[in-house]
Length: 77
Image (tube, rainbow, N blue to C red; front, side, top):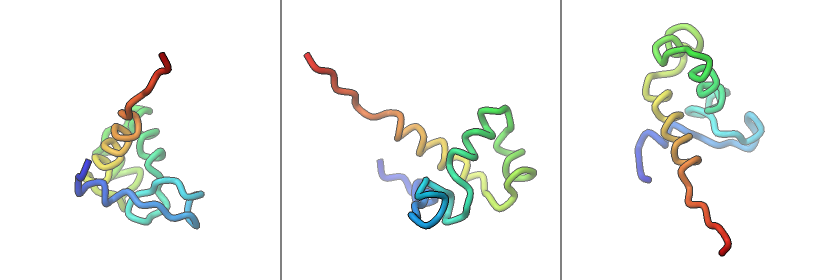
């Protein structure tokens, strides 16, 4: 999938153990997903919890998660 939002997801082996982060910040994709899973809204995340983020960062995290989970599964016959 060629979506410009995915450019917000960055990887640096010297930062956060190489885990996917948002725009080279030390905010992991999993941090955002965990906040969402715990009931925070995207608005709460960007205004209260992680004010350096933008709404597009939240969307990029969700898109990244969908892509990672939506891969073909092959089963042996």
